[in-house]
Amino acid sequence: MKLITTESHEEFATMAASIVMRKVAEKPDLALTLPTGSTPLGLYEVLRRAERGGDFSLERASVFMLDEYLDLPSYPEGSFVAFLRENLGEVIFNGSTKLATINPSDRPDDYDRALDAANGLDLAVVGVGGNGHVGFNEPGDDLGARTHVVDLHDDTLEANFADVAREERPTRAITIGMADLRSARSMLMLVSGSNKHAVAELLAAGIIDDRVPATHLLDHDDLTIVMSGELLRGV
Ligand code: GLP
Image (tube, rainbow, N blue to C red; front, side):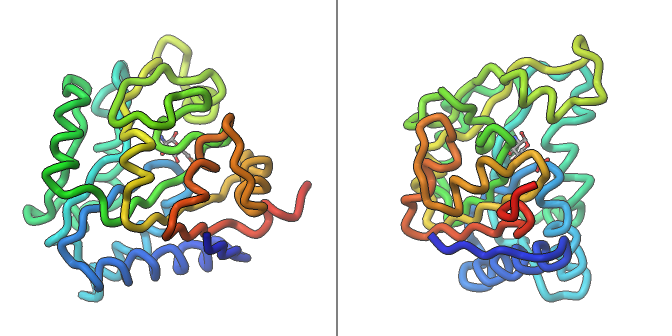
């Protein structure tokens, strides 16, 4: 595992972007996952700029959504696909990039078949939840599973829907499983956010803890973690 700690939002974003851009330059037709959340927003801004400047393109790539809410009352508003459209726009909605979306009505097996048809993931870019979830592989979930439906934990809903009334929140999601993430040829894990001190410390120390899914990626052969340095300074 290679750990890179950064000292500012800008450094975090440019470091993550340089890794993604290098991987895409090495294999322009790669299959990759991209996460939602506030963590990758700076990365996506750098990628949008690079794309506009002609320095970056995902036109030959296949982008797999990491997860999707299943019973989101406001769907498609607040969905993963809406997030991607808003934050990556032309970078992936350009008519050329293959985008594998998970629709709430899809069967998990269909997504596994799409992953198999792409010969698995070349690059898994993942964020981490405050409780250590990856995608929506929550603590206690089957760490050997492929795409599956999960019941979202209360702390995840609290983190992701703090401003949304309970009846407007989803309760379930569909997620790529840890099995497919673990078998990605390369992995980039992004860790930032003030609710992540505990998980950041485990990751930085290389401690695999059964209750924290993100730590189950620590023994991956090609894992780079880009982490906000302030998470390791304690509060
Ligand atoms: C959601 C997503 C995860 C993401 C997490 C962290 O739960 N399913 O893929 O990593 O949010 O979000 P944030 O970056 O906002 O902390």
